Amino acid sequence: MRVNVKQIDGEWDLGFVLDQHSNVSVQNGHHANGHAKYDTDYTEVGEMVHQFKYRSDFSHVPALAKAVNAHLVPKLGNIDLVVPMAPSRTRKAQPVTTLAKYLAKVMEVPVELDFLVKRPGSPSLKDIETRWAKEQALKGTLSLARDLKGDGRFDILLLDDLFDTGASLDAACKVLRKCEKIGAIYVAALTWTRNS
Image (cartoon, rainbow, N blue to C red):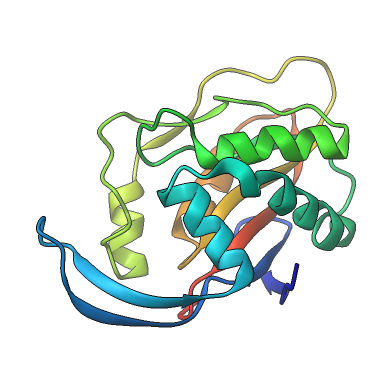
């Protein structure tokens, strides 16, 4: 798999993204529901993310998890557990949660599912364009469902599929830092948008 690793900065200790999401995307009309339609030339990683996130094709999860483990995890510090980013909407199978489970298995560390949660009915950030507007929409939407089991401090890997402005990951890290059992927070994302 071809990757183009990029370091990202934010409220976390260290973070990286595998590749750009797309090379070019041109609007070509609208769907019946009014949403814009695009002709998109995806990167290899971007195509896999698109397929598993929007087409429910989870066959790419092993390859994506192995790519994160091979290209991003070695750049980070010690990781005690994997935490998936809270899903933005309800799905039968959550893409990032599924990926986090597989990645944790590959890394041979625990995964904390449903630890970082988003309030039901929270607004979708997909159609919000500015960082400021996303920050406003995120206020009070993320929380921790429980405390971590065990003693000591745990260095975690926060996993997400797409890095855009960084507002969601920053908000998540601020909430995660409220847990006294969390030490370092590392971030791994699959793709970044052209504007980030």
